[in-house]
Length: 398
Ligand code: ADP
Image 1 (cartoon, rainbow, N blue to C red):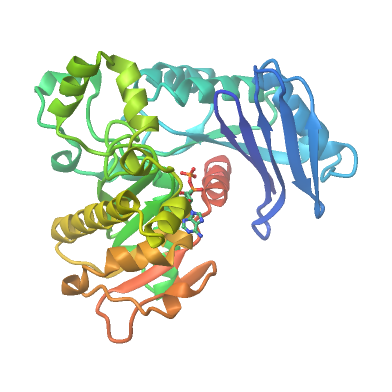
Image 2 (cartoon, protein in one colour):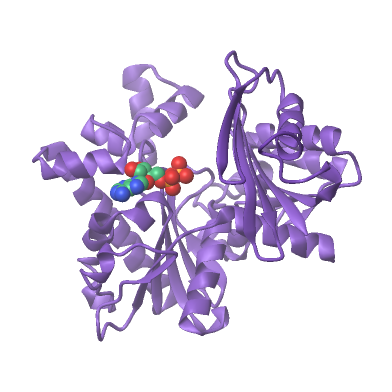
C-alpha cells in the first residue's frame, strides 16, 4: 500500500510517497512559490534529485506536476497515480470539531476552511490543498486529514481553559489547543516501545524543539497539558516567536508603537524570540556560535531558553505527579547537545541527569540517560510524515 503524505502551505506543497509495507520513503519533494513568479518543484527519487522551474498559478497545477514527476522520466516511481491507495493531509487546526483523523468529504473541507479564523496562516491553504487534491486525483483515491491539534484533545478543561469570561470560550472557541500533536504522538510512542512499556504505564514529557517549539505532558499515553495555546505563538520563546507574555504587554506595545491587531501578532511571530532578543538570528546554530564567541545577548537567549524550558518541565512534573521519561526531538532537540545539556543541567532534583558523552551521539533513538538516573532521557528523531501515513492507513482500513 502506497500513501502520499501532503503538507500544503499558502505557497508551497510538500509531499512524500511512503511504501507502508516497510514504511520506506519512495520519493519526496516540494513545490515552491505557488501563485508567485519563479515557481519550481524539487523532486527526490531513485537516488537522484531534480529541480524543475514551471508555472504553478494554483495548487492544482502543483499537484498535477507532482503526479507527472512521480510517473514520468528518471524520477518516476509509479506507473500511474492509481497506484496511490490514499492521501494523508497535515492540517494545523482541528479545534474541538476534529479530535481524530478522518476521511475527507466536502463538509469536512468546508469545516476546515471555517476554522481559518483560529489558524489564519494555515487552514485556508490546507482547504485549498484538499480541493486541489480532489480535483487532480478524483474520487477514487481517499483523502484523510490528520490534525496537529488532535493528540492534545485529551487535555482536561483545567488545562485548556483561559481565565477569560466563559462566553469567549462558548462563542469564539478561545482556549488552548496545542500543536505539533503528530510529532508528540510519534515520539511518545517510540519512547514507550524503546522502554519496552505500554504508553499507559508512562509519564513522558516530549520536547519538540524546532523553529516552532512546544512541550507536551503525556500521562498514560494521553496529553494532559501542552505549552502552545490558541495559536502556535504561545508557550516558551522560539526562533522568532515570543511565546507567552503578560497580556498587557500586547496592548502597551500597541499603544506606544501604533502597531495593532494582526500586524502586532505578525511582529511577535516573526521578530521576537531568539531573533528579537539577540538581534542576530532566529537560527539556534547562529545563536550558539555567537554565544561561544562571547556575544552577551546570544548568551542571554540561551539562558532564557534553558530557564523557560526548565520551568515548563518542572510544571509538567507537577501536573502529572511524577516523571519517567523526557524526549528531545525536532531540529534543535535532535541536533543540539548544548541545548539538551543546558536544559537538563537544572533538573537533577527531578531525577533527570544526562551522560555528556552519550549526549554527543546521533541516531534515530539515542539514550542519553546518565547511569543511575531515575528518569530516562531520550533523543528521538521525529517523523510526522510517517505518523500521518499510519493514521491515514488506520482511517481507510476501517
Ligand atoms: P521547523 O520545522 O519548526 O521549521 P526544525 O525542526 O527544522 O524547524 O528546526 C530548525 C531549528 O533547528 C533551527 O533553529 C536550527 O538552528 C536548529 N538546528 C538544526 N541543526 C542544529 C544543530 N546542529 N545545532 C543546533 N541547532 C540546530
